[in-house]
Amino acid sequence: MGSHARPNRLHRTGARIATVALVGAVLPITAGGLAEAATSNTTHSAEDSDRASAESATPASQNQGALTTRDQAAPVTKADHAFLLDARDGSQEREMWAGAKADESVSMASTTKIMTALVVLKHPEWLNRQITVKQSYRDYVSENGASTADLQVGDTLTVEQLLHAMLLPSGADAAMALADSFGAGDTEDARIADFENQMNAEAQQLGMTGTHFDSFDGISHGDNRSTARDLAKLGQRAMLKPVFADIVKNTQYKAEAPAANGHTRYYTWNNTNDLLSTYDGALGIKTGSGAEAGYSLVFAAKRDNRTLVGAIVGADQECFDDATKMLDWGFAH
Image (cartoon, rainbow, N blue to C red; front, side):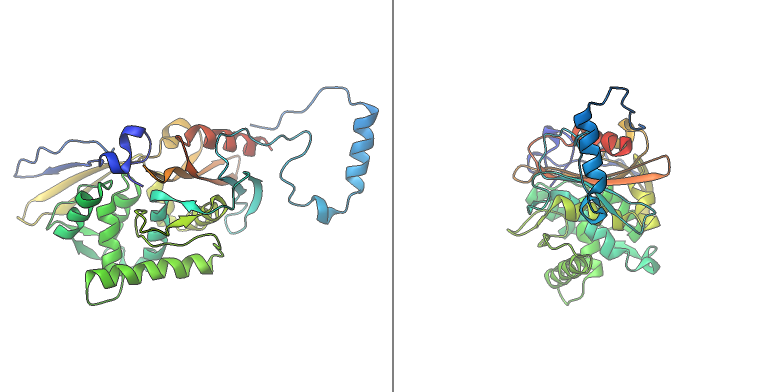
């Protein structure tokens, strides 16, 4: 689950560190963590004509939603746990292509944080609510080798700032702060457990039948899993939230927060999603990786008034090349 793009960024082998500066004090903290479809000009044989006639006679109900045809080969990807949908006008979705294991539940790593954000954004009136960073959030990062936004104890950040801190550098400390603040209960453990219950309730409401959360950030306790189909659906729903869409499209975000000693803290958070700088029309959404979970990526891009959303989960290598192939294929068809 941790930092999400290169093997040396893996969650359990080292945490990403966001750039942090404090006015009036010295904090030597380094930055770390961060086409159109081609028309065939070939001559068609009589066999091709006969096949075309037979296909045209097939009932529409059998042809609707077909993922591939003889003249429309599927994208060639290394990942089997992959899925691509056409988001249409945003509120509707259409399956375009499913990998061989698109419906197999596997660990989803930090793509978990998409649901964390979606649960928080059920309360948009709280975006300016202020949350103070606790020592337990930093301890959690240290104990689990988690990716971090390097939040400093005693600093006060808004919910919106914490969403940036969670979704861009994939800060587990920010995710914990949100879960602790939006869950109900008398203790930190109780509040986090309640928040995870909210995540599962939302997944059930969205029809994510292959998904279960036992984590607010992707560090699994044994049953934090999803499918590529479910994650693509989750990404599509999250992108309907303007605040979420505005956050995940940023390659970098700078924030100011009151520090405990009265000074102003400056944070710089870089996005782990390389597609934003390498793919024309990329919109986000979230990376994920871990020593056991492998690599995951939920992604979206828009071209010619079409928005495609896809997901790759549990891959054994970086997902950006496969995501590019899937998007290219989708926009070409």
